[in-house]
Each structure stands twice: as structure tokens, then as C-alpha cells.
Image 1 (cartoon, rainbow, N blue to C red):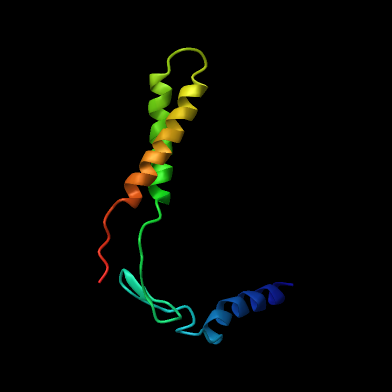
Image 2: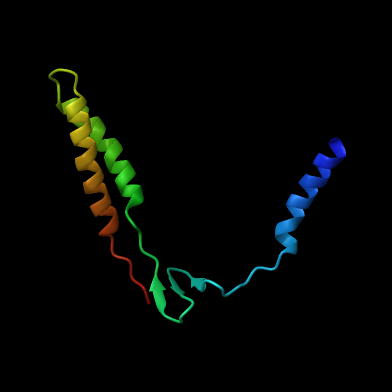
Length: 99
């Protein structure tokens, strides 16, 4: 059983090297711009996911601190929603220059 496991481990480590990968199947990257499979130049821009997550966490903390009445779930949920929207907008609005 030990020999079979060692053989599987060695094969799995060698398989990615042995398999050919098409270099230009999906286009190629050059920094912030890339050329797609049809030859058009595309630009890599942030999609706002990082700002969404950070904004939701910060908004939830602020909303919980502001809402001091009752169980504070409403303030936490509203703060997370507003923070997520604000964080996503801020993250996506950063200017990225593509040349």
C-alpha cells in the first residue's frame, strides 16, 4: 500500500510538468493589459470584491457600535449592507490607466 501511495504522489507531482499547455489559448498578459483570443486589447481592472468584504466588515462594526438599543442586530445588518456598497464603489472607482 505504501508503494502505491508513493507512486501516486510521484505521478501527481510529475503530471503537470509532462502535460503540454497551450500558451496562447486564452490570450497573454503584459502587466495590466492583455490580448484576448480574438486580438482585442483588454484592461485588468478591480471588480470591487476586496472593497465589498472590507466595507461590510467595517460597516458591521460601526453599525453595531451606533445601534445601542435592544439586541443591535438591525444596526449590524444595516451597517454591513451600507459598508459593503460603499466599499465596492470605492474599490471600483479607482482609476486604472491602460496603455
